[in-house]
Amino acid sequence: MKLLKMLFIILFVTTFSCSSQSTENENKQDEVGKIPGWSLVWSDEFNKDGLPDINKWGYDVGDHGWGNQEKQYYSSYRSENARVENGKLIIEARRDFFNNKEYTSARLVTKGKGDWVYGRIEVRAKIPYGKGTWPAIWMLPSVWSLGNGGWPDNGEIDIMEHVGYNPNVIHASIHCNKYVHTNGTQKTATINIADAITTFHNYIIEWSESEIKAFVDDKLYFTFKNEGKGWEYWPFYKSFHLILNIAIGGTWGGVQGIDNSIFPQRMEIEYVRIYKKD
Image (cartoon, rainbow, N blue to C red; front, side, top):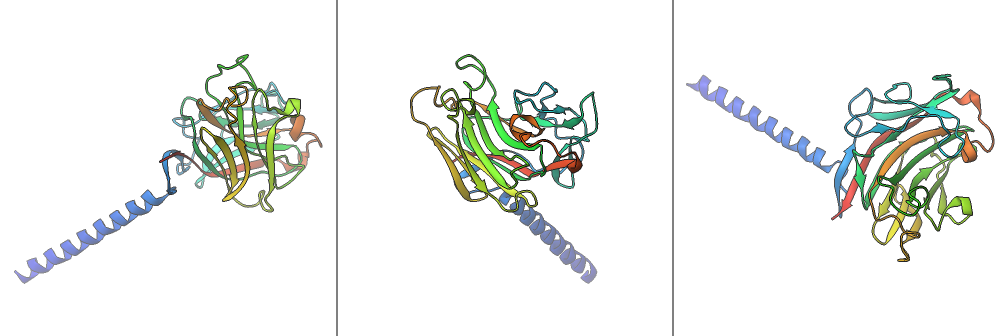
């Protein structure tokens, strides 16, 4: 009888301990990504090695210059250019002469798998370096319906851009019919982040009906206001999707040429998190 009683006590204590540990772990998981005043609605923590999750990411594919005379071929389902390893998404630009192009890279998109109107978009990333690299974290509309049906009428939101010949200078911008760089009227700002090419930082926008604000970590450095003058000034009232890519060369990234000694180059992403305002 004493033996049975002792076994019951050990079983009860073990069960209670495991249950408490499980609850504690669940609570810790629940805390991941929590921000007061915001609710997490979509995320990728990149916790499974291999190709990017096909339920969350698609690919833009091709080598037509992408409107900027870029030099790379964007591949799809090619681990050399896009993969998850050791808890990070790796987008890798290479000089590997694949598919008749000197340079290859990847352009991952959430279109049709993650499309949002307003919210907080947060991407924790470490960016590549070297002349000729042009990494970007940005957004395009999921439906092109305004003006001439093309760009810039339907808008563009650049959360982070960096050109390798100007290291550690981070750009945030918007483009639309009335504010676009081709006319010299773009709305943009920069911030110097001394270790952007060696350390992970959070690249963030907070987007509402009234404004778009851009941050690096907790530093606000760009605000674009809705002037209430119509879609030509504010096409940012419809669904946009997220894009992650490294371009090579082009009308901005290639201004000072391409340093072929730097390849391969990576943009590493620890997580992507999308929030809605409570």
